[in-house]
Length: 248
Image (cartoon, rainbow, N blue to C red; front, side, top):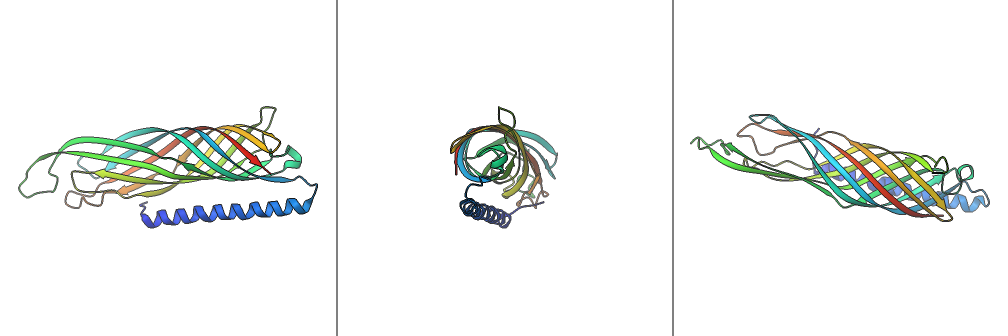
């Protein structure tokens, strides 16, 4: 599947709509909790996370003289902010029920590659063979996740987490053929586990997550004279983080 600027705008619009729905639901929870008086059935909260992530993209280029495969990786520090609604406080303790939330990440990771090869860069009739350098970068950014967490079980507060994430993949290249690849917006399923505790109006948690992103396919837009090439890739991200938040 190919992606373009319109696809990215649609995903950003959906992300904003989901965040708006979550905010409206939070207001509903606050209103209901106030009217319910002594019934402590839920709470709302927000916080920040800090940690690190390891990302890998296994990719393949097809349509050129020789198909090529490669795996690139990158590491990055991550910081995020989240808002969540917790339900079931009366059974699991304040701030320790099922949590439904949205998390947005700050920062980005960049993959880069440079190669040198022999080619007729413009398909010239003169048959001049030229040595060219190809360089390419791919940056992942604008990551957001809708998630659900189980209550924290055992004295350690062990919980499981599942969610759905989306991000933008921005490409930048300098190719001997004069071609270019577009940008993409992709989704992925997240799973993880961690430990959490609530004390008064505060909560802390640490967690480890894995995100299996959908495969992407981008086509070189400037290789008509030498045969169209395309690149497919499958990103994966492992992350670990520690967070602190407040709840009401």
